[in-house]
Length: 553
Image (cartoon, rainbow, N blue to C red; front, side):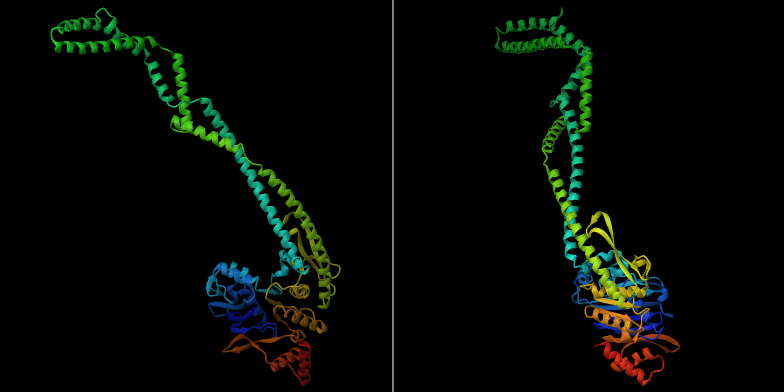
């Protein structure tokens, strides 16, 4: 509920402070007194468009402050708490408009954004007037108004929860499909890697062995020449070293028969001879195995090239490649034994889709039934508000895909004059028509949406008995919500719980606007002014008193 409004340097208002009360607050005053400026200031503090043109002449900045009682408004308190602006019982909103363009917003004394202010404001106040885009002007709200009238909020919530499950299943299936596609790509890669490594039939140490064999084949002639030459010189040539050595050792052995020390030396020489002989025979055997083999050399080169390519792709060592191949085989075995999760999800999605369509169709039928009753109820209320020929229709448009709110889009269509086709409400309803339509809506809706409603021009184009009906309907609405209403009609003002007068005054050559809460007697005088104009007679005062008694009865 709006409890306080403080305005400084806005248009012709120098400084104004008004404390609003629960129930029906009526604002009256002569034309040009500044009533609409007060409503514009409230709209400004609720996040409306700011302009330096609204700043009072001679001032550098304009400020508007509103204090709201948040008791029972848990939605706003939770929003403020999440945004870090406290959760007390009261909310102070301040808007500062500067000629320099440094416009600022404060919530409970802390700097805030206009976006957050607008989000909070939609849960605090609705303004219905010539230039306001409020609940009825936003088609996205129409569905919720219809559901509120038809008491279908619980059914919509059930559909929304089912829709959430359906979308979650769709997302999971999509994710699984993507995972399966990735799995197929992974399996293709693993199978290729497994085949490439497996077909290579690698052995640990094979690369070193091939390198050695390649060296032998590359230098086969040099190796053969060296081994055969040494063998000939040692063992098989005409002047073989081992033959001469054998004779020398024999001489030492003969001497050893006379001296044991020489016999020991002879033994060591004999051992050396045997080793040289063994070496010579080994050179003979080695030479017999050597041969130039260009074909084998090409095979080795090809094999080494293969191993080097595998090293670049998989691991820098042969052992690393073999280890990588084993890990590929293990991963392949795991992936190829996957589960049947996809089939389960598809079955669940089909079941959820069937339930969603069934629930959505049932909700659509209930909405169409509620729409028929809403149209009749609203036209009846509008007729009582001097809009006898007004037609309101609830337009339904089926959606290609369901949304969380249902299977259709809903928009109110309106025609104020006979013979005209109903069109979207936001495009053709005037401020006065919109205010009366909202007033009619408040008569038929079972629950309110925000704690404070402000009506401007609700009395546009009406008078007499109809205006008295408007006043009584405003009073009925004010039993559930705080209502602020600007009016020029005494019949409407008569229903007020609290009557404020807006008036201009001049001081030091400057015009300013003020507002006062009227006492009982002052209220009679203001009602008499509204009835009789500048000339107030005793008869006019008596008429005003009678009207006040009737309006509050």
